[in-house]
Length: 232
View 1 (cartoon, rainbow, N blue to C red):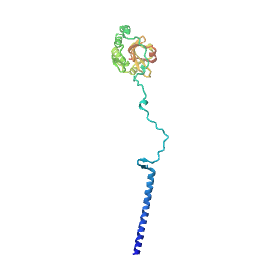
View 2: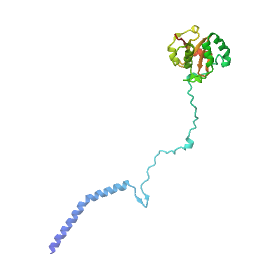
View 3: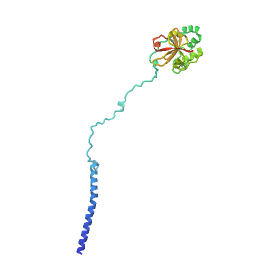
View 4: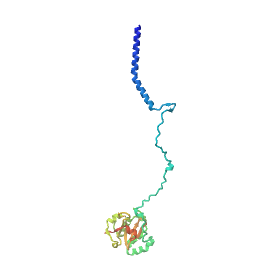
């Protein structure tokens, strides 16, 4: 009986020892994991953190500027879309208005009734790019209308196209009534056209003064003059 008790005690001791030996690795892994977690996580007691404070950065954070104070008062400017040839004032016409031009037009009507009658009818019509009526008209539309009504001839729509369809006249002395006179105003291309009347005068739809008669030898027009053209 005593031997049996000794044998049972030995067996129990061996079983307990084996159990501890088997659990040791697992317990070691758990302890290691818990230690790592404690090192990386905040520990709290009733909501108070014992984690070391973060190291302050030397970078200074600037508070956003007040929207009211940061607004820039930009003065709005109205877009005028002014053509380059309008940036410089054209000279005064040969005749200030239709009444002032009346005597000259009357004399012209005696020798060229259709031409000067047309000019008298259109004199003072306002200029507008793309305009084609007596409410407003541009330079090439005016010469086109004049050639149609006075000479029964057709011209293309733009000043540049009208330049291409005419025979060149290089010397102003060779100009005669009914010739076209062309200008390149602040550009290398033909941008303006009128009809020569003789005596150094031409009629045109001025971009700043409307349909008027001007002096070809005025400094402004001489500066931008590109030559004359005659429709065959």
